[in-house]
Length: 399
Image (cartoon, rainbow, N blue to C red; front, side, top):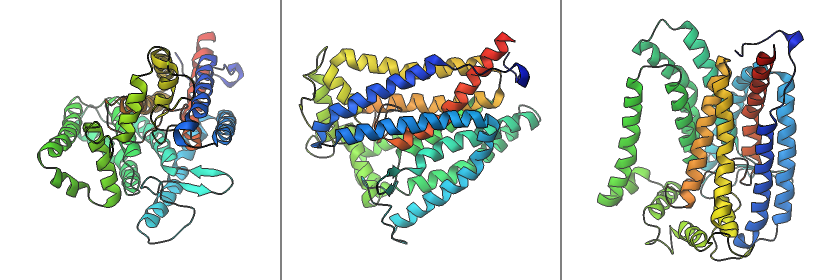
């Protein structure tokens, strides 16, 4: 049992395995950033490495500060953080539609998703929003399950509306930036939390059917009526996302256009053999190699062995968090970890899958490995809760 124990008997127990996995991921990521510099025609890999190290130091320190504050405060602080992030997202949407002109919000890869602060770096509010929505949803689910009157469809629908009240406005603002990757992560993780909260099985069929119809409908329109599909997406920025989808479905056909990123990455990986090419060799160039395509960088330089090791490392994090979620009886923390696992597992499958051509390119990074401070710092928030939960498990076993 892992119910909260008496404060006088509580001792903090650090999960060395979880911390070790994150540190090893950081080391692999820094190595990947170093190896990616020739692919981007850039000579700033050293500055990127320094920034990445600094972000890990800051994020690690932030996680332990949160541990000192306690999980109750973290869950409570999610609500004001949500509204602050909503304001920041709304300003980005206004910048996208030229309602206001802010130099701190440039257009990057067709989206207005970042605040670029001179001398510091970039900040992506949507990365933090996806985490805050998990915290808020965990609060909602925990309270709802205490108050509900039984396994009734109307009770499940009430829970759905409570979560949607916070999730849908945020998802809409992120889509309008426009960004499709993070909204997909949010919807999938919240759907998993909803399913695992104890709702009736009919919801699996309803939501699963809707998702299947949308996915296969897009593929059908691509082959049968691409003109209609283009109209449904509409707009230049959205056409950019649609072109990436075309590049995934037939990357060889669009090897010199929409699919050249994927074609070049797959070609570089496919010729790497068991142990990879000579370090920092450029076979074919592909952009965003230090972020979206860092798996391709590792696979290109270290071959099948290196790629396999990276897959094992990535999913080791998922397995460790799964073990913590299964062992704890802390209901709110279990709900939170369920959502985080939904995010991480999907992001691992999606990032690796898109690099090898199995899944569409969405611009999602590899957590704790790809370059980027916002992702690292945001994921450290639920990691701090995971560390607390592990400590409570150990305390319960000892006392």
